[in-house]
Length: 521
Image (cartoon, rainbow, N blue to C red; front, top):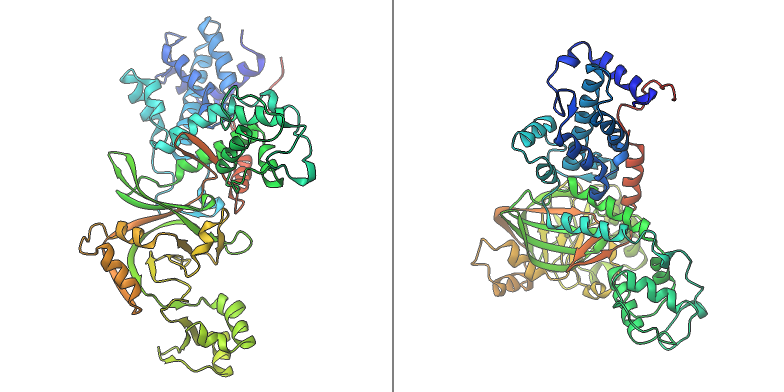
């Protein structure tokens, strides 16, 4: 039988809807009994966690319980049937909208994507069309982002959710001997370490446990380190131990946040794209054909410092390449770094190839205190001439944006060898500029590798306009699946934490949270 609470709720919905509710065409009931599609719909809501969503947001358990009551013919009135039908429709509409558009506005977490947010999506019309075609479950699955990465993350979510109650995480790893564990040493936690690595897939199942930290156990730890953005030295130190102690439940939440981001990250809105994933420190250039992503180029990048100069998240069209570019020192950098360095060491001005530019465009190459004062007052600016010490290297990829962010080479390529690579003032340094230029100029075949290198090495600034703009996306995902392996990266800028907070503050459940309290049974 219906609970008093739910009977009161159904009557409240019926009264709010007015007398037309009982007469309105019902979607999920026929002659007062639920259809097979009603059970399919509730089952989909119950499995919302498979998509990284919360079944509670759609009152899945309550709808499951009351649908069971209705299946037994225990509903007393048409109003109750109509209200349950309307509630199930409302829940499905919210579920579909969340799955299609995401649950929050990405601008809440500093993502300025130049695409329509929450594009029009008529969830009810979609439901009716799917039911008319007799393919409700299949149609609902198609609402999710049609991206290989989304499918892979969804599979990773199931894999890590299956580990939530694994015994390997029921007790903590013992303290490390002498702050780190190196090959050949003994350790009281070898068995537990092996269990965790085996459960995570970094150690083959059934690997014999050595008496000391050695052999396959070291190899397994290196695999774990590689998947977590750590130095792959096979040494169990503080940073590696910290990642080993992250529970599967925490990884589940990290994957859920990454799935949420994919719902509103515009990864398929152009036939050719360059995507930088900030926490991974990686750039990928790819083509999209028939919704299939074909990666053409992958390289390391250096992004803005986590402490104070974050690289912003946005998308824009690349329109120019500058060979042997000038570097116009941003006023903030000139004020806080460049001018103080020159005052401490006047030779720095000449060694770095700096010059002044007046408001009229006149170039001044002599150094004087008054010139530095003019820079600090905002009238003059400092720029760096093309050359081996130029901060932009010998090529710059320009996609006009409000933050004046661009891709460029660097005179300090040794930084690409580090695992953590947040060293810039916000712009993005690329490891393989020639390969990137060739991808960008793919539709201009006269720009061969040799010609690109010649323009970069010439030392004379030249701007080349692209025949076709190329979309550049600066994105943020702390979980990536590569070759079937799940990689986790630190929340470099705290955006995952902000997303978590935004989701917690979002209203949940149906009906709205300010509904009147009902009498308990």
